[in-house]
Image (cartoon, rainbow, N blue to C red; front, side, top):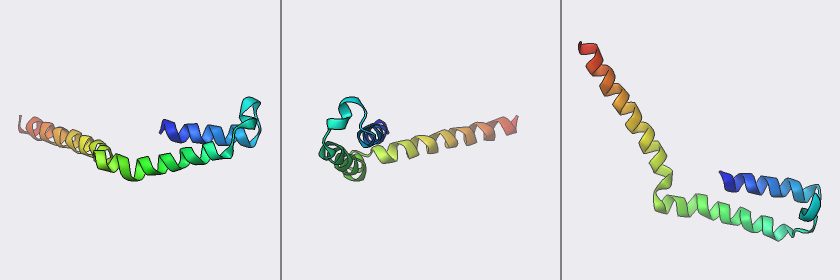
Length: 74
């Protein structure tokens, strides 16, 4: 997510020609966009990071369900 925020900030700063970003080449911003695309579409999936968050949420729900199940028995 920080990468997407960086790209958005650079786009705005370059578009409005703020300070030193006025001289920044558009190719740097395009290169960051390509890098972000490759990262989120391929690298993250190869490392399994896209499934880790979903797995953690499922585990949290399972623990809550088990806890509720034992609390109801008392």
